[in-house]
Amino acid sequence: MTMKDMAPKTMIEALLNGFNFYPQQTAIYYYDTQWPLHELVQQIEHVAGGLKVLGVKPKDRIAVMCQNMPAYVVVCFAIWALGGTVVPLNIMLKAEEIRKEIEDAGVIGIIALESSLLQIPEDVMSGRFGVSISDWQDFEGEAPHFLPRIQDALDGLKTTTWTAYTDLWAFTPWTHDLWITGNPDDVALLTYTSGTTGPSKAAMNTHEQLLHSAHIYERLAQLNEKDVNVVFAPLFHITGAVAGMAVSIRVRMPMVLLYRFDADVALKALIRHRGTFTVGAITTYLALLNHSHIEEVDLSHFAKAYSGGAPVASAVVERFEKVTGCYIYNVYGLTESANGIVITPWGERAPVDPDSGALSVGKVGPGIRAEIRDLEDRNHVLEANRVGELVLQGPSLTQGYWQKPEETSRAFLDGWFFTGDVAKIDEAGWIYIIDRKKDLIITSGNKVWPRDVEDALYLHPAVKQVSVVGLPDSYRGEAVTAFIVVKDGFHPSEEELIVFARERLATYKVPRRIIWVDEIPTTPTGKFLRRYLRDKFGGMLA
Image 1 (cartoon, rainbow, N blue to C red):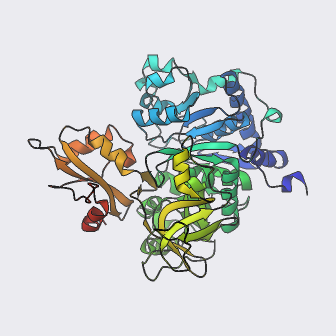
Image 2 (image 1 turned 30 degrees about the vertical axis):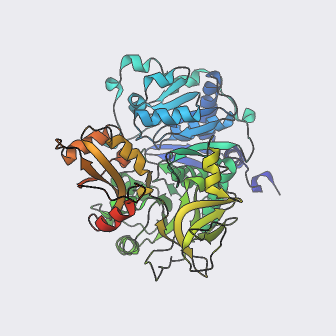
Image 3 (image 1 turned 90 degrees about the vertical axis):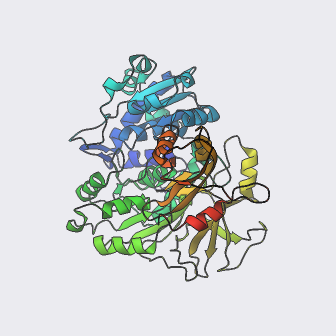
């Protein structure tokens, strides 16, 4: 067996395997920018050299807040080449949300887009280095309408505390022969998630996890170097990290980056690069369906279109296929499982559960085991077609949550991860997600924990009681909806509270609708009955 035939054990090994044997293979398309693998490696060498001078050492954690652009890929691999861990920050987070994650992870430095610098509290930079990336970094060609020009808007004092990304080139490159290849169980990402049991916490995603989940895509979606991956999902999300970056590097297929998803830009990229594969939230496919020219273009090459992150209605799949000729394949995964480990195999059509009407999310990938456990007895395994909690086991599953042993012990039992999703598995191995055990909201593929939204709304002087739930939404999957009891003497408008929330929460967490109620039903112990609200008002937004 030659070196190039061996399965890589870390992300660095995966990149170097491709670089050593196929240096001219295209790694990235970004508008008019095209990088072969040797150019990507050269960029990483320069950035790694600069980060080493800034003090990055093995096991250090560095926060990265960036859109889908070549610099994001470079920064991740530069950190890994130095033996460090990447802490991805959602670009939509607000100041206090950023503060919590930075302090919880104990990062030594922050690398962020210029357009995001004003979101980062200045005091958290004390004792930490900062690197700012221009939103126009690595960009060539005609700019999309959303690419920001923000230099003039930045406070001069603010920018002086940050080192420019391009200034890292002034230092001696950390050449690839010096890179730390690391071990499979090294933590590659500390990925924050609402999970299934409470407020935001970081899953420790190892190199083995990322590569094993990438291998599942490789096998079940039948991917190879002739495919072209048009990356819809944000790279700071576990879907983008695995289904965008990790799988592309592992199988040496080009990744097409778009800065951020926009239906017009995505459609042009699909056509220009003859994209064959992606994984996106169902909202991305609905956005493509609503494009004015969707019926005029040939998308026959887009044969491996996958969707995950939110329930997919069979009617949407049928409509997309009727208009484009492309079938949407389902995929299921979690941050804790390094994205998709249950996948509808390419060439097969997912069945519909006759009892619930749920479209199957697929079958387990190689090396993954799935069971259905009784909702009341975690040790009791249910037989086929019985409804209970989905539990998973295999190399794609996290080691646990960062510095949260109690959360880890609650989520795991004897090596099995309890997803919090109510599901069933039929005799053929098809898995159907029926419901969620907890109150987690998934909107446009983003996870929202109701308490985060409730805590923000409780800061408004007019709010007496608030309960937040996800109501069915044909576009987003679920819409964040707040039920509010107002204090006597106050008369706030719906818009006033939505604006109030928008100032304190990431955009995807902001309620889409406020519903005024006289009281919120509770259990005998005083807990709000969110399920009652979902059942009573569930038809309002669908």
